[in-house]
Amino acid sequence: MATRTSPDPVTQAAAYQQLLLSLLEQDDPAAVQGATAQRLKDILNEAGPDLRRRPAQGEWSVLELLGHIVDAELVAAARYRWIVSEDQPALIGYDQDRWVSALRHNEDTVEELLQLFEALRAANLRLWERTSDDDRRRVGMHAERGPESFSLLFRMLAGHDRFHLNQMRETLGQLRGT
Image (cartoon, rainbow, N blue to C red; front, side):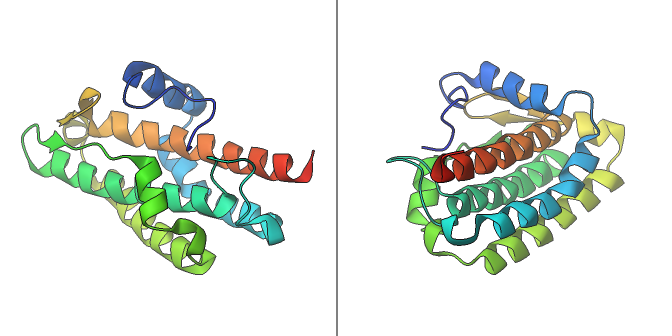
């Protein structure tokens, strides 16, 4: 399971949004997102032989958490572009647990996942930098959470980064009994 202590993103959509935004607080979402790659690398280096170990049945390993972060970045890239380019586009949801399982992220290599993440994140940050305030206010219709602006999604993703970076640290702590 992806998030042991977070509200369900489908059945508790508003609470999920608020959790992610609370983790961002008043910080610049672009700065938070810009720092994520290095924070990931630090945790992944620390993980060592615990990289692929799951702390419990139904929980994700550190590598699977990285895979989920990459999946979220890929989905966000498409959503951002639909919102900026189309009028109130439909934004489909996805089952994060199914993606991690079906894409077999625990079999991926760190290098491939990081390479994909860094390319997507760089493109998304460039898009953010070159969009106007009007573009950032444009809205898509999320299938599970209703109307969401580019700005809201971008800020939520920064909180999502923090949530899963913390979860990676907690996973390593559980595996190591600390």
